[in-house]
Image (cartoon, rainbow, N blue to C red; front, top):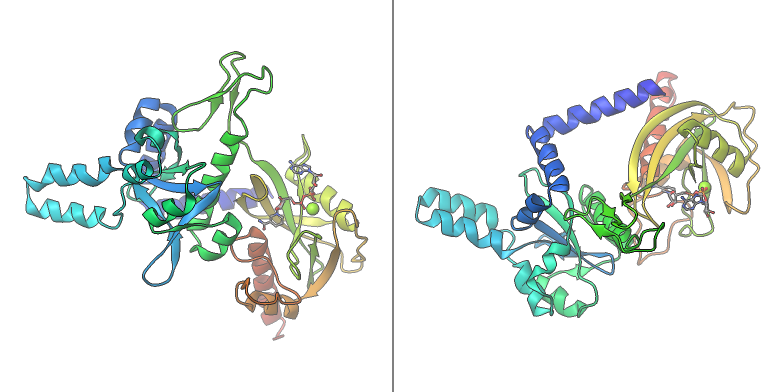
Amino acid sequence: MLQSFKLFFNCNLVRSRSYSGYYVSRVRYLKRLKEDDEACREALKSGIFLLYHKLSPLLRETSSGIYTLASLKTSGFNTTPFKLFHYVNKRILHMHLYICMPISVDLEHILEKVGKDKHFVNESFLLGCTDKGEPQFSLEVGDIDRSALEQECRGMFVDLRKAFFMLPGPESPLAAKGQALLRWHQTNCFCSATGQPTIRNQSGSFRVCHSSGITYYPKMAPVVIVLVSDGSRCLLARQTMFPLGMYSALSGFCDMGESVEETLHREVAEEVGLEVKNIQYSGSQHWPFPQSSFMLACHATVNPDKTQVNIDKAELEDARWFTYEEITEALRKPPLDPRREPPVFWVPPSYAIANQLIQEWANQQQLSRKLHGLK
Ligand SMILES: NC(=O)C1=CN([C@@H]2O[C@H](COP(=O)(O)OP(=O)(O)OC[C@H]3O[C@@H](n4cnc5c(N)ncnc54)[C@H](O)[C@@H]3O)[C@@H](O)[C@H]2O)C=CC1
Ligand SMILES: [Mg+2]
């Protein structure tokens, strides 16, 4: 298990470094913004803002019909490079126009139009920074005329669950992070020891109660998710609250003081009455629904002669073993279309780590079938 962990983290490090040579400087820049209020306030001027209305992100449809997160900028950024370089060198001017043009709507101007003070952008929370080094922020617009703002921004606020189906892969985690951070701040305005208000730092990386001296940091609840296999089939389950026909891997919150392995053994025993072995770490994911969870995904096996499930009906509506053929068919199905009847059996979409586990299991089955000369 430990080895798999090491391998995973090393791979991720290599991946991050290779897709951007500026990884270290970006990370250090972000660390400075988190710790230095003044630097973070300055960064707001060149920031990219993701807007949320009652925690729903603002999306925009591109000319090719694809939805993306709508990124807005403040006038500080849009005009300064132009003024600075216009008189210096025409080539530089062209370069900057090229970089700045895609984002044409000025956030401060828009916010003023819907009755917000231009200093309202200071209420944003730092999310990260782009490959180009532009800091990204999330901003909850609160109680405003929603449709007026949508019109001004040429976009629409979409419930995050729906947005996950519409956004291209890499944008979903960013939308989720923005929502999670906003939600955490909304629900941690008071100190649980004194009842006094907590005060945020500029980046939003923590809140402090000046009365008790307690610092609160944004939290995620660790959850273990496991795909159990008996060698030729995998075990999937559904809760009554799941959409019709959807089955997923078993999951459960870590109890205080538990290791990943302990949670995994306990949850499988509690929910389906099985004892697992051969735990293998697969990956992790921040999951925003219903509140921030930190999903730790693993594979595990049971003896092929001990596969009888005994379902805890208080937790699960059903749990069943699925064959390789059933799984590959479910994986082939296109993403769920809300306008059509859901299929009889389907698995979570690709943005959910459960899908990654199922995909990995299918790939592994395919490989061992090839080795054994099966189709
Ligand atoms: N991204 C993915 O692929 C998947 C994500 N999930 C997520 O995993 C999470 C946990 O899965 P479940 O099987 O429902 O957990 P679970 O099997 O532990 O059952 C949930 C129950 O645990 C209790 N609980 C204990 N600690 C809790 C905490 N910190 N927060 C909330 N409830 C707590 C509550 O009584 C709750 O009703 C869910 O939020 C679900 O959305 C689940 C499956 C797939
Ligand atoms: Mg569960």
